[in-house]
Image: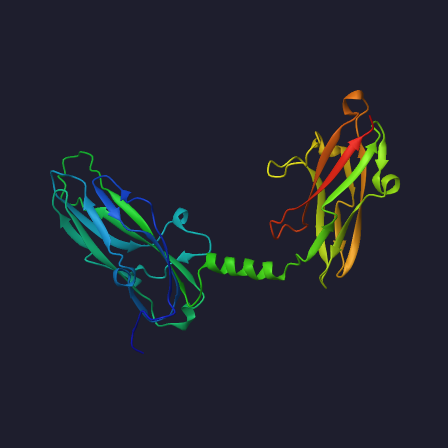
Length: 310
């Protein structure tokens, strides 16, 4: 089977660096690259694909330098989760792979990727390193220290599939679509007045005040409910202030499963410290509801407005 050239369906995600890479004596203008949905038998020239040549510059304004560029296997610290080392660095070729740069000169090279025509590669995610370095083989052998600059970029390729990060995003979106968020907690604002201090007050029994979770979907939902500290984005209505301590409010149950098309009541109890400083106060307690498994960072807020006895 003949080698195929890059065709529609090959996805490419380019992770651009903000600045060139710098090494002792050379600078490299290139990027870490992730290619997705690459078919077996595909050949890609990154310069043609995305107008992306590899450019190397000699930072020395007085002397020339020899540069070598090659594809090598990554070390363990360079590997990204979900990827494995490329089976053969020869899949990646750099043309030209070596050149001499005069003082302050730069040169460009093409990076070519050729994936073998083997269906067994489908579903794999590979990584290799493109290593640009100075060639100091001609340095004088006088026992002195020789510095060799080296700069490394990553090339990641997913064969016949999206990359690990894209797959995770797709999985997360699919999961989110299955989560039931078709519920409300009523009322948004609950009021209870003339609450005595220094004793436990059952708001349901003594003030007929409670919140109700209304699940409008056919599927059950599990929630966690708790009083929380004040949020700077949620301001009490005029005449009230944020409650100093959310622990004064008790909510039961704190974790609840609400079956489909049903209503669950939350019982509230308050105990204010005994003392003149809490008499005649008007407080807002903030109540936060989240999904019990935290699969979606949801935050649903209700407000409980309380006034204490004078």
